[in-house]
Image (cartoon, rainbow, N blue to C red):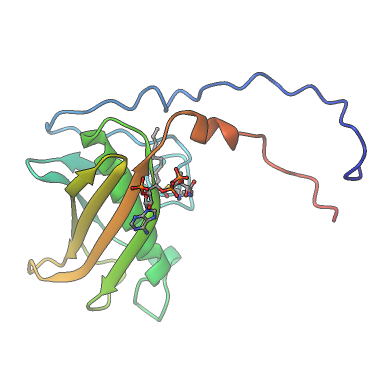
Length: 178
Ligand SMILES: CCCCCCCCCCCC(=O)SCCNC(=O)CCNC(=O)[C@H](O)C(C)(C)COP(=O)(O)OP(=O)(O)OC[C@H]1O[C@@H](n2cnc3c(N)ncnc32)[C@H](O)[C@@H]1OP(=O)(O)O
């Protein structure tokens, strides 16, 4: 179909995905925070390419224990920086369970202080540094098992309403013709 051909397709009514209204403030307890949705790259249990990150609330924010594996290799034996960024972005996304409002990443900055090794346990922590209206200023660290901080991150998340997700909630594009 060319750009000028009128579409005869009637769009399906937009469904509000289950995971959007189910975004409450969850109190600190011993349970893992729920994934955003099953196929989320960062936390989805049904995404075989994902990190399947599990995090818990604590008195300061959230924390997680995580190992990168051979799927995330950059330099030999070292995690790819983009994979590390994905996991930190996800941890911030799970930190939203302490806010109870949908928000998305506007800015993410990372200092890689030392390599993150594959198949090695790390502890990740994130907390809300400050809130200014829609702006959530977030901070995170990755520590090795000697409690040395080897990665730090800051992020600006902006709260959004449900329409942010509905606007882009279209079926996957499967026609690859130019
Ligand atoms: C169900 C829940 C699931 C939520 C979780 C779902 C899964 C989470 C996964 C992890 C998180 C992700 O990867 S989220 C996916 C990656 N991120 C995205 O796709 C977001 C793409 N970006 C956008 O859609 C848009 O830029 C928005 C919605 C973020 C913001 O657009 P906007 O609403 O028009 O905002 P805008 O007016 O430009 O800026 C708002 C205010 O922020 C300030 N501002 C903007 N940028 C900066 C900046 N770098 N530093 C300081 N301040 C800034 C502006 O000056 C302004 O201040 P003032 O004038 O108001 O004072």
